[in-house]
Image (tube, rainbow, N blue to C red; front, side, top):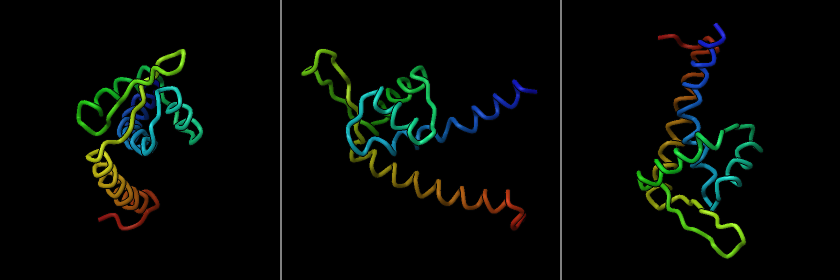
Length: 112
């Protein structure tokens, strides 16, 4: 039973992580700073999940990235592209609409 609930929770979280990550890239962030910002908002994400997600979003042209080598430790910074900003706004509106509908159903509202 616990394996099943863990699997279902993971599936439920998967789609929300993309939206959470996009929401935090209005300004440049590197991987660790992004993990910290998400954790400050009680969204836990492993680096083994984050970096493949960032690469996928960059490949989809939702993000741009740039290396900063001015410090001792080079860091790759990620930022929403113009296209990414448009898609984030659309996804955010979809989230609000879907969550309102789902909340209504879960709270025993109209079940049609």
